[in-house]
Structures are given as C-alpha cells and as structure tokens.
Image 1 (cartoon, rainbow, N blue to C red):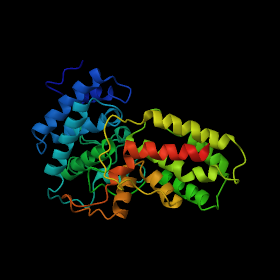
Image 2: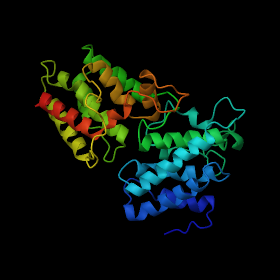
Image 3: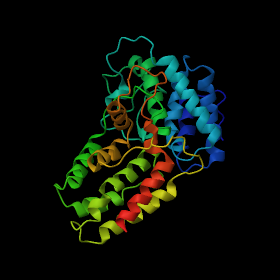
Image 4: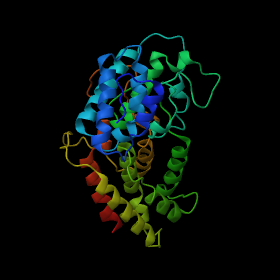
Length: 321
C-alpha cells in the first residue's frame, strides 16, 4: 500500500485513483479513512482542499458498497468541510464546480476538480488557482460528494440536471402522456438495459422510478411486442438484486412518495440521477437553499429508500407480468 504519511499531490492522486467501485473494502477503506480523518482534523484548514479532492476521487467506491465506518467517517468529514468553508466570504460570482452542472452526472469522481494542484487538467485559462482553491469552491465539491454518497442529505447544491437527462425526461413524458416522439418500444427497451453494474443510490432509484412510471404503457395494448415488458422485467429484477435491505426503513407511514402521476414520476426518475437533478427535486419541494436547520420538510430521501424501492419494484413487476 502507498504510504501517505508525507503525501505529495502526485502520490495522493496515484493512490486515490486505485480506489473504485470494484475495490475490495480491505484495500479501499484504509485510504478512505486516512483521507477522511485528515480532513476531519482540520476541515477548514489550508490543506482541506487536498482531502476533499481525495474523497471526491474515491466517491465512486463510497457511493457503492463501502465499509460502514469508512462511509460514516467520510460523510462526517465532508459535512464538516461544508460547514467550515461554505460561508466564507469571497469575491467570486461563481466557482468552477458549478460550471459543468448541466453535464455533471453522479460520476463526479470522473470529473476534474483541480483541487490537488490548483489547475484544471483541461487548461481553462479563465479559471485561476484562486478560484479553484477558493473555500466556497472546495465546499461545493464537498457538497457534491455528500449528495452522491448519501442523496438528499445536504443542501445548496446548484440546480441543473444534465442535458442528456433533460432529453430523456422529454422522451418519457411523451410516452406516459401518450404522444411519443419516436418509437416507444425502442425507447423502453433501451431504458430497460441502461442500468450500470454498480449504480449510485441515485441512479439505482431513478432507474426503478422510471420503470414504474412507464410500466403501464409497456403493459398496455399500445405495445404489442412482448420483448418490451420482458426486457423491463429483466431490468427491474436485476435492479432489485442491487438494493440493499440491511437497514430498516426510517420513514413513518405515509412518508414514501406518491407515484400516482406517471408524468411527474418519470421526470423524477431522471432527476434522481444527478446532483443538479436532485437539487431540482429539492427546489420543487420547497427546500430553502439558504436554510440548513432542521425543519418538518418532505423526507426527500424517501425517494432512495430501499424499502420504498422494493415496494415500487414489486408493483412494477406485477403490472408488467
């Protein structure tokens, strides 16, 4: 294992790049814990940007099936960084982390934060080190990482679903409102086969919500090709196998979302799949972006609740059978 006692940016990046959703916990957790503990020790310090960069780089692992201690420690450290850095005064109208929100899906670990070196790999001359290393930009990346690992548990993520997701929302809105723009059978089969092998919680939830929103159409007389519902059944069953059910449902009776409106539900299905999309859901439900105190808000994390998703999947499979 790489020794990070006296880390340099290159050595850190090399170590963190090895951590992915396929990494075994006994190899990944020590690196995550080392990074998170360094951040937690001084979340507002001059090296905070380095440790936030590391946790963003390893968020693909943390968003899949990390060790419980690694996940908890990373989330606590990232939230502490948000708390310490997020409201510091700065002269900037915007920050680099916001620039690509309309292209940013949940795979933030594939993006270019620039936080290790103060430079973006793309070489954008308009973005200088001062803006990249601005405390509010560091806090922004920390927020994104928290939201990917534990959706709907952090506020003030910029609103803006990726353009590709916007296009999918339009496609499925047409289908569920009975005026498809293209070939609905082809669109539904493509969607049924779109689930990644190791999805984030938001992507997995979004997939199952989309399948539920469109299942009535696939099971109707509008679709005469049996391969469409069969593909959807196969996809839903594969998704259910990925749902964790170790933790009991934390929601009170009636707190799981309603999916009675297929148009709304199909829209949510794609908004769930990105930080900016989830921020749009939060905005729809009236979360105050400037107020992070506890309130009696809609429990938006119910959209990614495994118990809710198990129920939704069962309902979908019955409709498609």
